Image 1 (cartoon, rainbow over the protein chains, first blue to last red):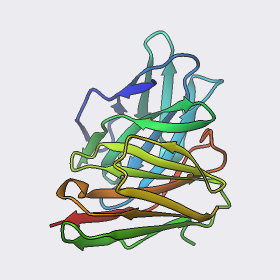
Image 2 (tube, each protein chain N blue to C red):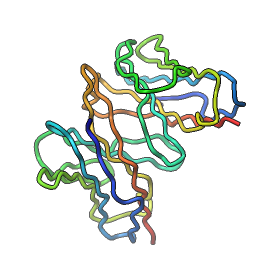
Image 3 (cartoon, one colour):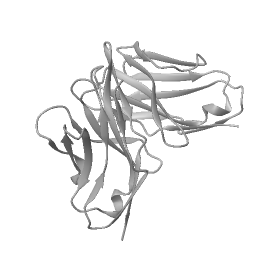
Image 4 (cartoon, one colour):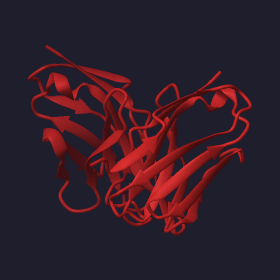
Length: 115
Length: 114
């Protein structure tokens, strides 16, 4: 089965600084990778995905993610963090089960951006 | 317009009761999902329906029974509720069973079993 790991429970960043939220994956075959964000008391919102093509994927709200095959990583990045980016971030991988697919999520990383 | 909606938003009930959560999507998607998020925020898929057909059924107690009356709706019925069922339940939808375009999530239903 496919899996992703998010090694950090929490990441703290000062506003205006660059941020990185880490994700590594373990898949057989080509990986289909996703990042989602969950704001307090809200559902998950899709940020970006990697299926194929350029290793640098641009997404919503100024976020981007870098796919690195040799390091089996898909880290989420933003050049300049905002306080409003504070939320819970989930990395996910598409796991094909016969005719259907499901998303397998990481354990989440809480991003805290302070002034 | 709300893309994926769930009712109720909060549900507090006693152990042993039976309850239902409803989900509707107006995105025209053909695939819908139920996820459970526990107190540690761990998110795990429970069920998936494609065109009203059950295509994913994870290891979930048979007290949980999903029902999809049409492509736009996926309801979750839970019998004989237990304390461990307390969690936030998220509905999601996607176009295609592959989910390659990403899934759209509802706001969640916080279930508390007393």
